[in-house]
Image (cartoon, rainbow, N blue to C red; front, top):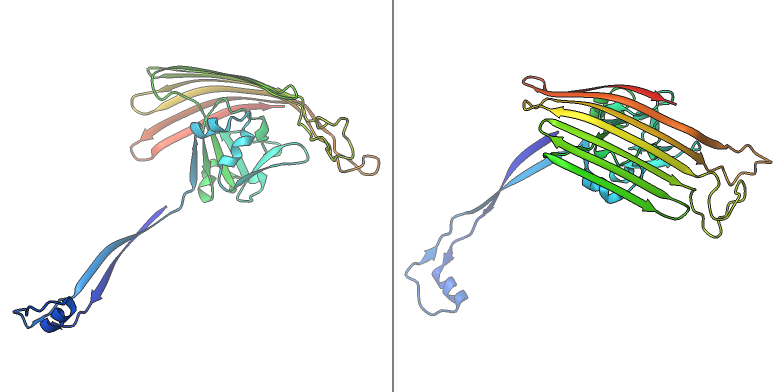
Length: 314
């Protein structure tokens, strides 16, 4: 929403009449002026003041900002979203909060398809790979309700990659680190005429989270170098075939598959012999989605877009 205001400022200076003798005395000259006095008219200084106030409700994050983060999952991209923070609950789920709204009031979409798991309306951001992402659109406040119910806290629409011009692009990333951490990611993009092809896949694994020399964990810790039960393995595959016609209409069909396994660090400050300690393990976290998207610019309604999807989660 944009509101513009315009104001005009006038300053009026009234200057009394000054005699010629006074001018000569002030200037230090001895020559007399032919005029007995000068009368200066009022001086008006005018200026336009523009007061512009904008209310930004949609924040768009480009692929350039995503690449700079060099992240393995979408959890690290939360820092790019204003008024948002990431919190890990006792079940080991990395949940996003926007403007202090509850995690069940924030919805995450991918090309318009809901990623939130239906049984508890949450999504673990740490299990969403970034290799297939080409941008993010974050809607906050009242406009986010266009995405459906339970999104009053905000809606995040992750967007798949594509080429803006004809040609092809191949990217391969390989990383290795401590604690047997490894990342292998490959992405292929191609655009021929009206057709766009995207293929992306990746593997990420780590033995766990490193600990300092003095971990300070009293219970449920089996070693001094790796936090107990924090290993993680994530595999993903994404395929998309799209077509954009000269009249501006777009159609696409996508397949996304995420297969992961991870552990959750136990509560190291609680003695399991005295109190109850939660031990969590996800031997299988699998999500498969088939998505169909369509969009067209209509003369009266404007840009109309829709997404239909089938999801299987286990």
